[in-house]
Image 1 (cartoon, protein in one colour):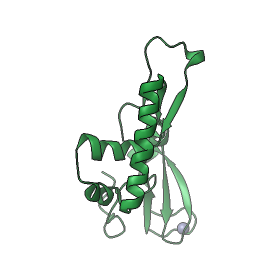
Image 2 (cartoon, rainbow, N blue to C red; image 1 turned 135 degrees about the horizontal axis):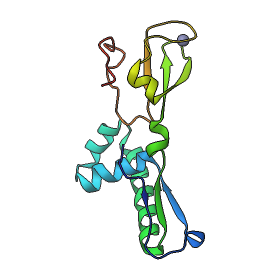
Image 3 (cartoon, rainbow, N blue to C red; image 1 turned 60 degrees about the vertical axis):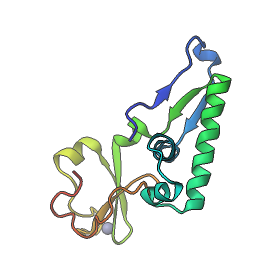
Length: 144
Ligand SMILES: [Zn+2]
């Protein structure tokens, strides 16, 4: 998750400031492709999406960044702090529920509150590739 989620051009009054919204996926695409300079193929694998999807996300991200830079708009990366506060879980039977971040640190959920199955996994925004293999062995506190 990007630690900084807001960029603002200097000297533009807030009332006149326009924002572009970069999704977490778009930020991640830029990070992998442009910052880490990985091949598109590898970026797509890391994000667990097809190459076509990756290149669509990437060009959308670049267009927004260019818009912000050249037109003096602020960039907000959606989902940074806000979505970190709550994590959504899903059980193997398809029930979903939210767990507040503090709760998760202290007592991570062990079973579904609806059907009590221990086969649960955290959901992340659009398959960023976290949590792979979580089904297989989360009984040792796989969240850390
Ligand atoms: Zn359930």
